[in-house]
Amino acid sequence: MSWLLLVLAGLFEVFWAVGLKYSDGFRRPGIAALVVVTMCCSVVLLSMAMRTIPLGTAYAVWVGIGALGAAACGIVFFRETVTPTRGLFLALLVVSLVGLKLTTGEPAGEGGR
Image (cartoon, rainbow, N blue to C red):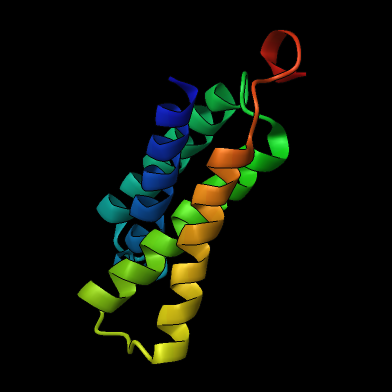
């Protein structure tokens, strides 16, 4: 369940990052409000996931999902270029996220502390 919460937290991170772009420097109040709400959702879900997932792993995966998702959205929605090198590093990010999931053992003690 904690990993699902962490993935959702990462997805909310992508939403607010894309929202920042659409908010035009917070000059569009409706979108800016949505950005703040999605930021809060992201952090709350991250904190819930951290109850059982170690801090370093949870934070790295959260940031990684956000970075990967933001890069993908930039490519799809904002026509950012995809060079072979950029594609390689995005693929390495995916490998890193999967590796963190596979190598994170069960938490030690209550709450992963």
